[in-house]
Length: 465
Image (cartoon, rainbow, N blue to C red; front, side, top):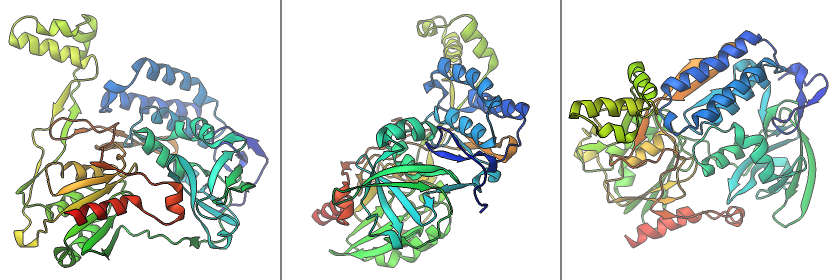
């Protein structure tokens, strides 16, 4: 990693200052306008939840940014404006990614002699891992109470959350915790820390590559975890559906699961991947011949109906006029003008061809949280009609669908959600999260004492079964 050079210039993006001179400045004004306009245009034609956007505000934001992007000092400043623009849509599958030419200058929670990992717990920004040599100076469970002279909540609201592309308040907060110390090399943070013993610690940190990689406590980064619990219960954590290996590992554990009286599947860290892998695992856990999955819609735009709806100012009452065919056309014009005319995919089932001898159907609990997202939510939706499966924890992220990706000037990447997903019965959960059957929260004190009330509740539930 390059050494920080140049004069540190103030910038209210990450809340500190960073070395402007090290960041690339390759984009022309034309490139910047084109990138912004391309994203704006693609959203207007393809974003599945456009009907939930304040279009007047969206257009005003675009016009304001046309001037702002031209005056950005470097490519990083430009992309941060795009990220803020995208985040205003509040969708986890609609976002902007920095080009590699920029990411090599960005570090997360690395401060030379210190390495910090932050997690949100019960509304607090908590240090949940620290490099091993600093574990006594900054104990785990330490809460960040202020950043650069601002209360943490105010800092988050002003400097971090406006750039987080996620759907629900809790999911944005959870993701913000992972990004709160993510900045270019040289960024300076003045942190006020409250230790578990109540004592305050004030420290100044500056982003630079961490010298020590060993973290305390050690936490598994595996996509699949398995362990046997007391009372003949089995616990598995599926932390990602990104790779087919997770299906293989699950199948390898089926003999042990088959001997259990109850199963716990922890999805709290699972931010998605391939829904096909999720469904393959679920097919082993049901007697049903098919899985009933999300109902899917995509925008069905037709410029002629847009014209009719706008030109003739068609209102809801107008759609009840005339013959059935006329009413259908009026309704389409009315909905198209409001970004609400959809084509519904005419199937929402997956055949289950898993051999019955390979299936294991037993009382099962899914553990959920605000980072349970995308294909892990698809997995949960498909269990909605499975009476032997329940959910315990916190509401999920409320973000799934299919993202259409495209490149931006300078090598960045954009994606837009083009599929609207709902429960099979039409209930919406994107933007709201899937509510667990039993809600349980974890406190900072629980974390310090290494207690997991969500898991404990799941065990108690299965024991009663």
